[in-house]
Image 1 (cartoon, helix red, strand yellow):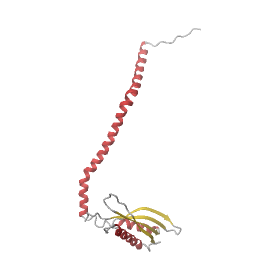
Image 2 (image 1 turned 180 degrees about the vertical axis):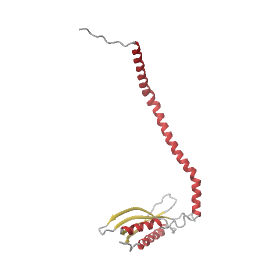
Image 3 (image 1 turned 90 degrees about the horizontal axis):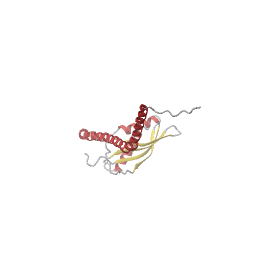
Amino acid sequence: MHSSSPRRLTRVQSRIAAVLLALVALAIAYFLLLHWWFVAPLLSVDGQMHDLQQIHAKYAAAIAEQPLLAKRVARLERGGATVGAFLSAADPSTASANLIQRATDVVAAHANDGAGCSMPSKMPIEQDNGNEPFRRVSVSITLDCGMQPLAAVLHDFDRGLPYLFVDNLTLVRSPSGRVQAQLSLSGYLRPASSP
């Protein structure tokens, strides 16, 4: 029984093994010493710069359009586009009363449609407009309607002048088959500087 001695690499094989080991060592050194400390943070900064450049381009385009939009708004105002768009009253309490009367008139117009429509409750909502350029006036109303009259009332609120906005709409079907709708109806007072 004779023992076999370990086989020695030829000169070419040892050179190839040395080159491979050097490459592996270089790759490990690159990732440990360069990539995670220098290259990865630079790539992250480059991505952030790209995102910021896109945001800047978007805002620059919006700023560039501002004079054109201002001209269009002025042209619309000269053409009477805002006539009747605001609530006609000068103070919020009168505007709230007018808004409740407007809602009452719209509901009364649909009182005999299909299953009919009524407004069992209505009350002003206190508004804190803060620094908003337009003063908002809102009322809370409850409607008791058939489905089609309710749709007609909401359509009239949405389509008429002054512009009215329906918010916080909650619908509940009553045992009678009618719909109870709780909503906020809002409009805006004309700014003091507007004609």
